[in-house]
Length: 118
Image (tube, rainbow, N blue to C red; front, side, top):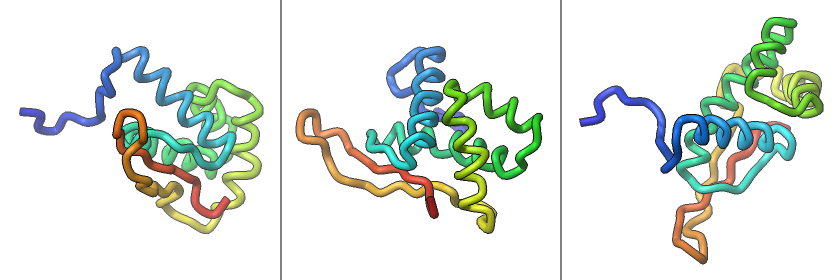
């Protein structure tokens, strides 16, 4: 049984899964919305929420913690300067997932994850 086991394996090794989620989070902040499978969207949502919370704090320590996860300095700057100020009044719920239905080729459930209010 999988009691209290967090996260999804997504059919990848730990390093590959970590790199995938970092890249998804980076692209989410670059484009403000991405279309991916529902499982990947649900996996990247808590990471994105934590990074937005760090960006709202705005100090140097939180910027360095966020730089661990976001590889592109331009995206990091956009997260801290634009995205954090756009959702200043929200306490939580910074992202939203829309289910789009099955994909044509392999019938995987596709979802759109977006940052609310940007």
